[in-house]
Image (tube, one colour):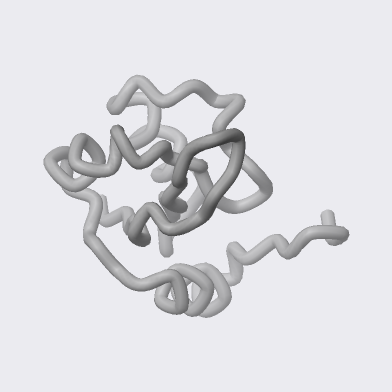
Length: 87
């Protein structure tokens, strides 16, 4: 299982966020997030929003650190990208 996480550089709700993604399936992503104790409500279209204070936990659990551009590329190449406004 390989999931990926970008640096916590996305502001929102008074904190910084990362995106956790899979390049294989949403099932793989959901299983990894559940193992971290990340609530399902943190899933948005094609990724989980991970607060900066949980970034190290995700990496320690096996998430591979990549850039934000890599996140988009990985999702697109896997056919898992779901941009805003699309189902």
